[in-house]
Length: 364
Image 1 (cartoon, rainbow, N blue to C red):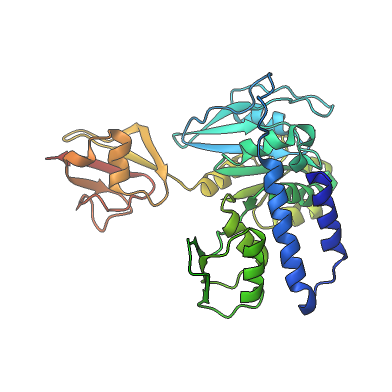
Image 2 (cartoon, one colour; image 1 turned 45 degrees about the vertical axis):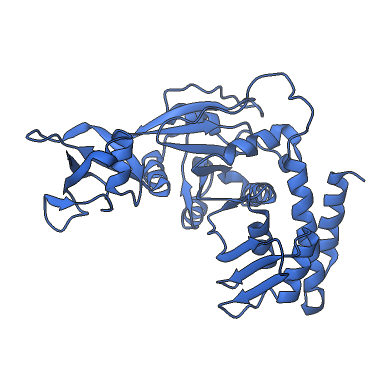
């Protein structure tokens, strides 16, 4: 029996099994087996790579955004509108066959936008170049899931299922579980909270499925067996996702209002260029980027060339971005902006910068 058949059998058994107290160990084991087989499925084959057009694109700019969705939802039109790149758009499915990059210039940042080929159901098993599409999506900072507003919620649930099965967790936090495999001493299990979804016996059964017999585990929150399996596997990607409903000009105002009120959702129309500015604002918020301006002594700040960093960046991060040796020659910095109590404030390397702060660095 091949891996695909084994996955299908386990999925059917999980669907058949009624969820109750008596079956939770059995379900936990089935989920562990399922995660193991899916990991094997995603491993590249040992044979030489097939010749053909390269798929992945070199990372550039200040952030990377992956544009995923089913065929003919308007991804290529969106890329052409937001960037200077022209991606072929047509009324038939699978117009885009490879990964097309573009750059959105917004608030001084260069955001790389990747138009990926349409995903179809079964993409996680490799259908329709699905595996390559999903591999590229894993390298992004934010996923924009483009959905057809006229097709309801079907597309969203199918895409979430495909991404979930390959270890991409959308709009979720990493489970707060400490896990460390050891060379001996058996399994040490502790928790700082009352566990309602996992028990020590279930944790041991899941670990044995992965042939782990010596480990230290500490649950700091009430996690499910699925979340514990994610921690063991260790290759899960947790990333923010923006659900973008396109073609709102073809549905009623009540439906537009309902979709717009859903969490992490934005409604747009590429055909009529509606609400694209708001989408850019939301994207900036999800990317959590910060613009920092520099200033030379006795001169006005340079507002034409911003340094783009992640939210929560310190003065040390700014030094590393300017030059790798600057931090070692650092004496102090003067900062103007919302991160200071007064302007200018003299700060050290650990001072946290905020959006549109101005910094002047003084060397030893």
